[in-house]
Length: 401
Image (cartoon, rainbow, N blue to C red):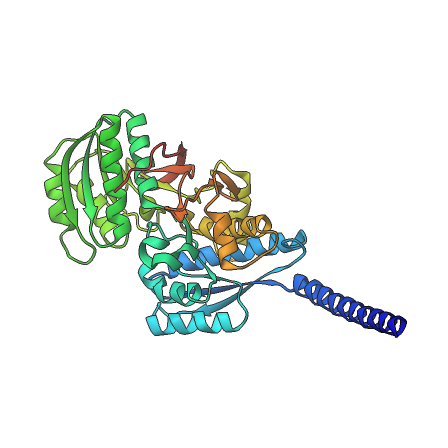
């Protein structure tokens, strides 16, 4: 009786062991199959609206970068795949529908547009499902917990945080021996305001003097009034952060008054597409991701620009680099997370980034700042409507605003 029970129990155990082995084998095979599935990046972008000049170049650069990575075997043996959805001018309902659609198609990560207000419906749809949300070039610290609360831990931008950019501008101004500055703040965007605020604080820390503070706003038809008041103050440099129609109005307005004082702008003032023919743009400087004028110091960046040109997507500003850098950063995070694409796992890696290499240089994040800081900005000068690279600058201090 005891012998029968013993062997019967052994038979049960053996049967269970065989079953477990079979299940393990099946699970292992399934895991192996999953490991070969592509890593899907769902990209909700604006193809023709206000954000198209920013979104299209970033997406074009990202596609090229993905192709390059896949040609080398992908990410831990898995190919990258980009699926897109046009937000049609970032209509909130359309943007949210795009995000839902991309998530429904199995997107592991969601990319969104380069303005946090426009991006919000997409970001919320992603982070509410525990999916990492990435913007290639949002420039404020709102892409993170500051705007999206606890779930904002899953939101990041590979743009330059305004505090860092404004600080780098102050560093450059001081290095040029410009000891006094007059500020003109475009109040239209948080990014515009924060850049000038950061310059203001850091420039004074360095020993600089602010001799005037003016303001204007996109669409308010008051830039000329600000220029007139600015012109009445002597300064080593005039500082602003602006784009759109106010950029040519601001620069030509100062020059039309015979004022040759250097003008320093943020990435918002990148490119020469806006340059006026009379008067020509002179003694004008800006900081940016990359020089698109054939003289960027990085051979890898110049190669990317050549690839974009060959693809019929020649960039007008350095903002394209955010798309490629975002791909590089996400790939690094996936590798450091041992292949996981879970939002929380990737976020945990991204906040540890300290001078991590990407196509455009080295970048950093922190638990507080989910938008890039520590970048080596390219300083570009436009003289007689011709742009050229003048050097690199990196912020040494990030002012608290």
